[in-house]
Length: 294
Image (cartoon, rainbow, N blue to C red; front, top):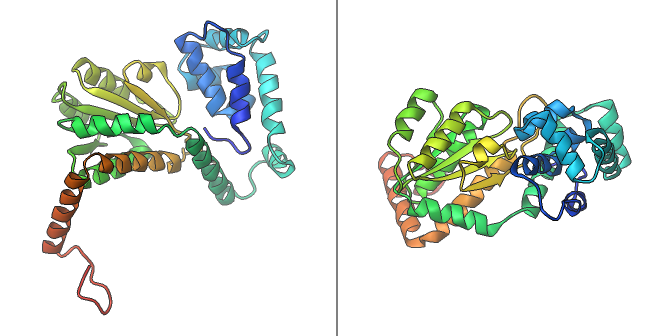
């Protein structure tokens, strides 16, 4: 997640400690949590960190040792010191006192998340996802819970751009029926923040087995989901209360659709014109005051 006060120096420090041979996949998942969620890593337990990374506690300890520390406590001590040192004095006070104004804290967190997403922006990855959707016979967007909103907006705008993209948000029965029809000419985009549903992992693996392209938009590089995905797009999604933030996730899927619209501008223009004509027939375009219509 994006954290108030984090910067690229924090990430560079961690990655500079990598052993020459690199990390094993599960340890790499732990590292991504350390980089993307420094506050939770700084204050959370070993068990919490293991859960976020989708690994066991022993893997967290081994990762700390691979980074040159005696164990997790030593690494966490330095993580916390570096995290707090990156904050301003008022921000440090806020960390220790709690959040007095949840609304303001939420806005600040979302601004930080967008800044982090922008710093890590990889146009090549977005282009790959957009081109895969453009080439697919159809694309299924899998999203559930509160982040279903991200999937619905993604699918709606991609359809408007001229592509057969549909969101599945209504439970396992519909999901099973849709996944059963996927072929090697299709694509699946799995959107999952905070808690990873088992059905999402199963759907991604089944789609991969059927030859479809699979992409994951998530806030933690869970090995269970990453192993099924062609690409994992990491999105900061931590909020300031009991639900995850959807802001950065929404920004990312909007960026993908913008890239998708640029793949075949003629197709997208034709789709928009056809949609507007249909909106007019259904009287969905609001008339402007003093004008003849929109």
